[in-house]
Length: 353
Image (cartoon, rainbow, N blue to C red):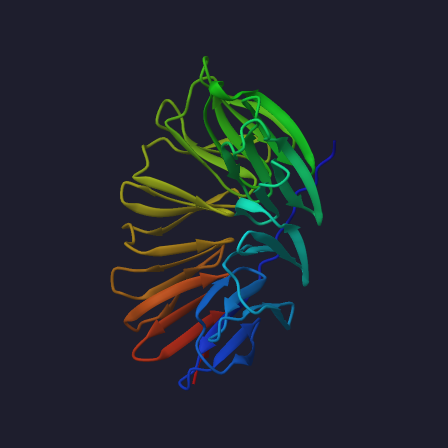
């Protein structure tokens, strides 16, 4: 099978609350009003904004259009491509402007970027929605429940009713091994990392292929978009990506975290970023507060200034005392003062006045 990695185009989507409490969408530099009153709830992803308006109506702003989805929603989870939402036990999906019914008797569901997994209580089946189609993962009639399920951006690791660990990827199911032999497992985008007992070797399922990375169990590991970062048995920080393993640091890291395309880590109190094969040293201290999305990073420095790493360079974008900030898509929104909200996008600052 030939697999082609999905390259997610960075989006620049957020919203303002102006001084009259109107809600205005920011869409790649264009600003337009969508509501007259504050939102009850909202979730912002790279490509859409899902929200309950002030009256409880469920709406989605996507592709320059405001969709009125339903009069109410019990719960919803928005990702970059899909929104899974339920009205009591009825499960639906919002997919590129279309709303589809998935189940009338949903018992439990999980949503990631390209897949939605749920247990259908009527059919007693574990199911997945992927690429505008529904696939059966497992017949759970005997167990009447959902076994262990873990989602990556476009991968699903699950234990079936025969107690085998499986991976769903690009519409196919590959069996890993007996579930009791899986010591740990973590799915990402186009990758699933796991440790298999009794030999405790470290392996990845990478673009549909099983590859052994280490003969010894790592101290820890974390998956991202097409890569896995880990601390090996010698306490070296390593990254596997593009079918190659790179040693990033021979010193034990103070910490490391993986989100999407970035790994941030600390070595001897230096704050560093690994992105696209390169290591960037950002600060000689570890910030107390930072946020990551796609290939960008926002953080507060020691002086209280807001800084933004865009995948290549770091820019100080505000010297104000920031009350809060959020990385939406590949831009950053921040608040200060009483009602001041700014958005930094493409080396320009947009204001809510």
